[in-house]
Image (cartoon, rainbow, N blue to C red):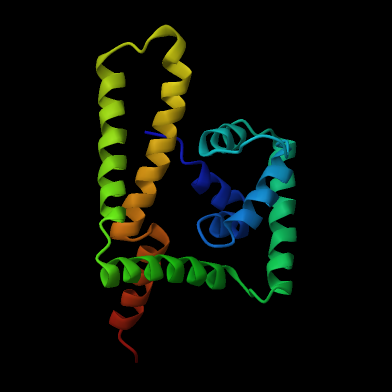
Length: 180
């Protein structure tokens, strides 16, 4: 199973971690890369961020906590009062994408979802049965990590995110609790 770097970020820096999955992801990504000391130059793909988070030292983790506090202050200045507001934006973004797909009957999200799923499990199966060529091991692992992250996005899109599921479960529990 691929390392879930976003879950780790969310546990250390909840505001940044929540924002990463939504429309404020770019701002959160900048805060994350600065805190981890990742160079501004060059691409920052999922695999590079995953490696940086996984290999973070205690000073970098402390810097990430501080960056999260600073990011929360910045979000408040922009009118976002709490994590629920950021999650609501991300949930609205997903809902708009789903609504667009329903209205337009666009086949692209389904085709991409199928291609990502087949690619992820196909590459996983290949790597389990065969030894990768000598010079290709690292690139295949990067590809597997990227496809794994993309597959999580596909599952979240079609079946909901764990944050949304947790909130739904919490709301259902409140409704079922007898009031005395």
